[in-house]
Figure 1 (cartoon, rainbow, N blue to C red):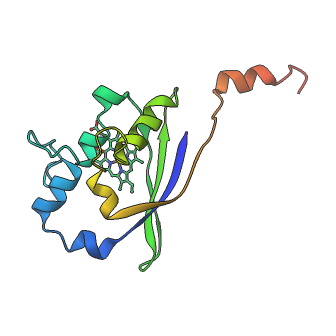
Figure 2: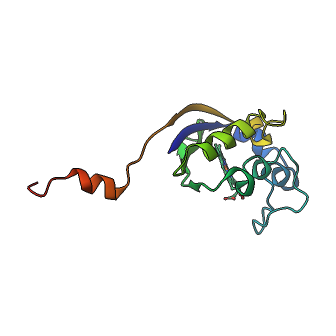
Length: 128
Ligand code: HEM
């Protein structure tokens, strides 16, 4: 599991018109449909699951009016897709960083191992 705290520059984000926000994310805002001609530095292009591998996300917003952002929670049975996505977002693959990182920045981050329920059950002895 990859857990990262991201602090948003909401003023900069809100200053963008909808069309520019859509270019940053790579999806249409009104109906969430993926843009056919999304920029290569859009968030969707930077985290393309068809090329980098599938992950499961459970993001949570946090904070106050003045200091806030997203707790990114990403699960994957293998670490590699998450790592590749981070490298792609940083521009290590093609030199262009994810446009989203112009409006938010990671302030903490760590990988955690989440054992399966089957393996946890196997640790419990029948007497307990
Ligand atoms: C502040 C941090 C982040 C924000 C606000 C954010 C926001 C978003 C948004 C709005 C979407 C499009 C809607 C959707 O498809 O659900 C999206 C898609 C996605 N994000 Fe993020 N994201 C963040 C960080 C990350 C990170 C760190 C990763 C991976 C390490 C990641 C991986 C993905 C993936 C895999 C998708 C789906 C791409 C696809 O359609 O295949 N995101 N994110």
